[in-house]
Amino acid sequence: MRVKPSAFSGPLHLRELYGKCFTKTDDSYKYEFCPFFNVTQHEQSLRWNPYSGVLGVWQEWEVHNNTLRAMVLREGDTCGDRFRTVRVILKCGNKSEVTNVTEPHTCDYQLVFHTPLVCHPHALLVYPSLNTSLQEEWDLIEGRLLNEELTKQGYEKSIRRLFERAGLYMSEAKRVEQKKKIIAKEEHDDELETGDFHSLEKCSKQDVKKMFFHYPDSWFEAITSNTKFYSLAAIFDTRIIGIIVSEVKRRFKCNREDADILASSFPLSTEVAYILSLGVVETFRRCGIASLLLNSLLSYLLSADQNNCKAIYLHVLTTNVSAIRFYERQSFKQHSFLPYYYSIHASPHDAYCYVLYINGGQPPWTFTDYMKHIGDSLARLQPCLLPQRLLLTAQKVWRRVITGTIAPKPPPVHHS
Ligand SMILES: CC(C)(COP(=O)(O)OP(=O)(O)OC[C@H]1O[C@@H](n2cnc3c(N)ncnc32)[C@H](O)[C@@H]1OP(=O)(O)O)[C@@H](O)C(=O)NCCC(=O)NCCS
Image (cartoon, rainbow, N blue to C red; front, side):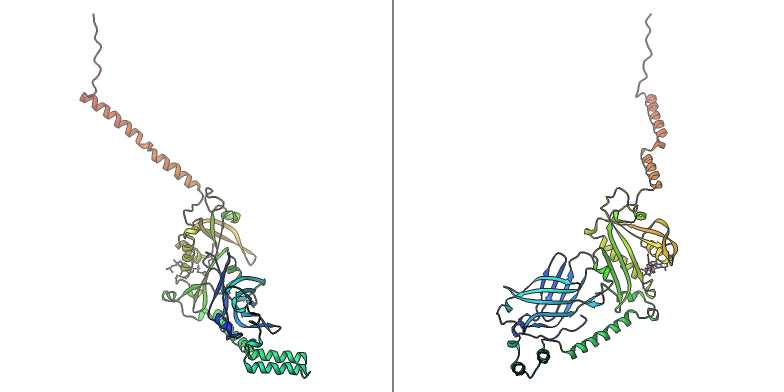
């Protein structure tokens, strides 16, 4: 979480909810609401990098007409140039449960929480929830308003300060302090992320053991939020040092130049995985990181529910020797040469398409394959052995004649 949750505040009978969590699952997401703590969202997807993040951290109450209208949870995960927020509306219900989650504006969520704890008509009134001294202070403010010692504006300011002291609203001082902490943390994270990898010592294979792989909260929003992409990052000491991004698609969705990756006997609905990006920070290369990332992709694609994916393919510049060596070491085979495939700084560059067949996938037959097939079929007939077989049969017959097994026909008898 980017910030710490505020302390518990509001009517004491709601303390019963503190430390508990309530979930709601729909087709795509599981939401978890932990009152006075946070709201999280977990994508219900079989892909290996489902979104899992914080939608908001408990901050303060929204008060309207001296009634607690909603719990406000802010400072969730990044969403473009802002942060996700949630409003939780409390409603009377037979049991405590999250009944509805919506996103009225992008990255601003609204959650409806039913609970028997708010069924009493006074359950969410502010005044009864305050301690005696704050109640007395409120009485005084009301009196000053009645006596016209306070303007409407002055009254609202005084009430706001009172709510801050009651912990219902976040105080301006706390808001500023929190902002400072966030900025300091972000600057620290930036330093780590943009840190000069070249100044690091060259990695060793031992370092890889210290590494872990995960899906950073705000990492490449577009890639991670789109279910058709499968992406994974290698992290070392909070730094992203390697990534792999792949897309699984039906073979008919392939570009024309890649349409012949699979033999035509595979239906158009057969899937293939395209590696859009694989890269490792320079000082961490040759430590097996790309191999680990690729192996993770492979183990996913070889799982039972990905059995329809028959090939993994990619394009690589013909001049990118490291990548070519890498893929060849991983048993990828060169499938085609693509002249002028890339345009880099307005100049054309050739590429190769490399493919690895998985789950029984096969490339289309080439002329050599057809010739080999004809050769194999002929070899099964064994035409070269025909004269030898004829000779053996003739020898057998002759031996029988000699040994008398087959008696020669008696000469015809002539009667005079
Ligand atoms: C290609 C790339 C991803 C490889 O990453 P990596 O983490 O260094 O790869 P690995 O350590 O897992 O290498 C595994 C094997 O691939 C081969 N290999 C990798 N880089 C190689 C190189 N520069 N020269 C020769 N072989 C190489 C080796 O056989 C290596 O095993 P070894 O180190 O035991 O000899 C990396 O060089 C890179 O990020 N390049 C720039 C981005 C890029 O070109 N991406 C590919 C676009 S299609």
